[in-house]
Image (cartoon, rainbow, N blue to C red; front, side):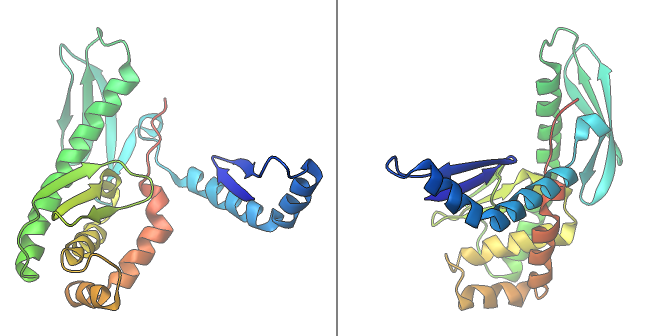
Length: 216
């Protein structure tokens, strides 16, 4: 049997021949673990950002205000501390359009920073530049690397401090040499990012604060 705890819901998977009483007894024996998972998820939900509801979003560890405006076309006007999101009255799904526009603006900012730091760290680590850079939305990873030398980074990293993003960059570049988490891999990470343990702990403890929930 197995238990899944997701979005404050508890699901038990069991073979059809197992009785309901046996399932309930087994679930009762796991109540402390279930309670811990529910508490953990509740705390994660509480610290997520609500960019449209609060009209602010964190970018590189700095708060940006968000303002909505009407225009003849859809675009984002950006300053050092503000995003003004323009949408046309003709757009029916305003929330989805605003989300798309904001995410594109944030993706551009993160891409520009990562490209700059990739150039720097590739030189430091004597690595050729990756063959491809992708920014995407992921729930369970901050970055990834494959044997084709393609790197992927989580869009939510845009809210992290620069030095945390640098750690993820070094982590993925180290995978170009070691496609594993062996001692040799961590030794390479440590050589170019000595405080990697602190950065990894920061992501573990504060990663949920980088997540977004788009609601009104």
